[in-house]
Length: 123
Image 1 (cartoon, rainbow, N blue to C red):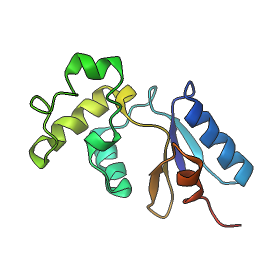
Image 2: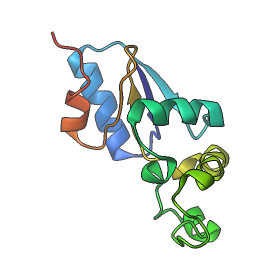
Image 3: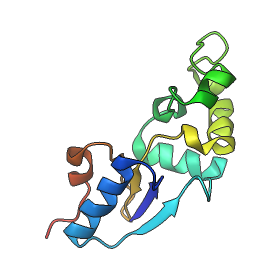
């Protein structure tokens, strides 16, 4: 498993603790220090079954500066998908966290204990 976290985020720390308690094998990626490439974002979006605007933290100050809340400037459609992905790669603070990707191809945004439990290995 790979866990994308921001160590300052309480939900990220909770996910790390839950994985540790479950005895899961995982690696941590501090995605603000090691931002994902556009290609990595495309892959994780496919695993999540989501679109880039669905994993965007629009309450972040940079989202406001970029105008991401304005659907006229930032349409949520297939034609705008690459633009959203490029922006997430350039500004990783905008990516929801934590994201857990499993070795079998599944992924979740583990903001709730239930989401994380859904991908933990059964013991």
